[in-house]
Length: 425
Ligand SMILES: Cc1ncc(COP(=O)(O)O)c(C=O)c1O
Image (cartoon, rainbow, N blue to C red; front, side, top):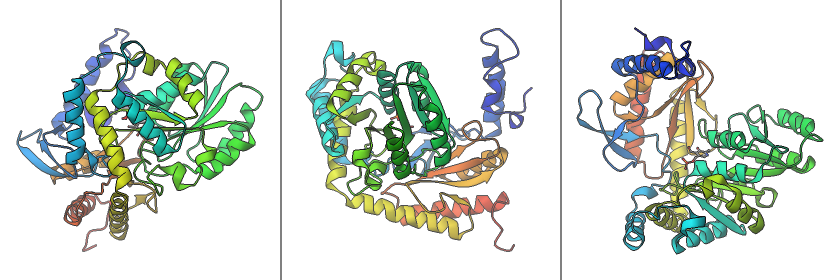
């Protein structure tokens, strides 16, 4: 019998037994023991809208439980705004539940075209193309543009969809150490005469740790080595920049960045994603991105909600002000209680408490969960071994009471795990 404490997900990628399903059998033993121990807190059953508070079904008691939600990317609280929900409903009334096919062969809605126009306007770009998910947008941009003689240069901590895009494109991929500009330059030099098309792709805000890419230095190097730049703004939209366009706007680099990717699944309270840029590039991507060509259009509800959220986000910059008050309050409170918080100064709506040992993180997350606070535990293989962390994301809707309740729980649990000195100690 497997003791789940001695294993991680990485141990079941391959199996010593050659039979195809053997690894699933040994994984099942690991998984069942992990669940039985009560430290498996993934795929929690959510019974309410995923807002600043959320009801979940307790896996042990089967009761419904209210939790303070510190794990949502719903940064401006738009997924429960009445006008956003109403826009989703009226889109269903007009178009039904699905177009049941991909845009090239089955057609598209005026609602999608309007969303693409609004996104292009928001981004200050000639055109935008909407995909069914943010994941597909990254995969689509990269597979649409890159060929085997081309190279994509990425940050090592880029989102999985960027890496998968490179794999599917059969282009070359080179990864530089996280946010390490000397390493980026080393790679750019080594690529100088080797490849044809060259593209740097980075997350504007890194999804696991909440730190930003040093875009001014990246675009300087891109210019020096004549390389195109694409920025994934999944966690920047609605959070950073005067108009909420994200990291590119925050650093004032609109003209230096060639392509911008965004998702609807964070600030825009929906699902779907987009790529924005010059008209001819975007039109080319539409015709060569396999994740656009061979996947059904986003549902009318998703498009209707994203369109309305975009309108609300642009009309109410005060939401972003409130979000930053919350981010600064929570970061300061964690730091003053003695937590090791990353980034040291807040850079986005995401921050992490550095825990270290994977087992400590698993046990802490379980206790935090049982005390009514919903956080994400990020452990190996998502991060390096024993560099585990508790990931927190904040929204404009969190009240001071909710934040203080969460702070109290985190403090108590950290003390009981020796991560913080006890009040007596
Ligand atoms: C940085 C980043 N890029 C892309 C994606 C994919 O977006 P979606 O979940 O909308 O498919 C995510 C979401 O997890 C993300 O964090």
